[in-house]
Image (cartoon, rainbow, N blue to C red; front, side, top):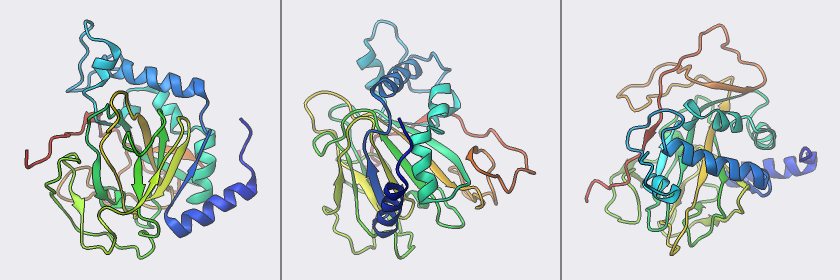
Length: 283
């Protein structure tokens, strides 16, 4: 696939600055998508290393083995293919146009979400992964057609513009997993814009934009996606990584392109893959 036209990249940048998100189709080939789907099975079967909570029993079908995974964090730590996909040229050229020519990444997430699995309530990613320059950008690659029926993402356009991180609290909505929900904003809880994608397409969204997903209400099948979070390499990463206090600059990162202004500091290897709980606190 040839590089994207400069005018198209400019159009994406303008839409991203205005709305906080953009979508682009046909970024990964059908063969690349199929390879990533097969890699999910390999991870779930333990062929890339142990991940607590996965089911590696050989008597189960591939669909049964991956079916218990709602979200798996940090798959790039054990999967060379997912590590390579973080630097996919068609993805990176867009993130560069949206964020910075110097990019680093600190997180990947693998979503499987079979039919009947829940979504995630309204939230802002920068609430969990703070940057000092508001440069956090998620690249959400669809590995199946993502539709309203099977639980595509929804965005509140422009919700990133004020640069406010809204408070969060536990919810009591069985449509969503255990993650807290953002509140205290002026956006309609049942509003937003659906981001439907063909397999191989991707959505790119700012760390401050309010977004959510609804359950997979299709009768059968999966809504698989691979998400990588990027940020400008110029920014420090004062990340808590689930702890009570943030470290001044976490160096458990992957340099994606450009220059690393902090290359004089050693890289770290702290995080390991883990499954996110789908059971809400009220259940």
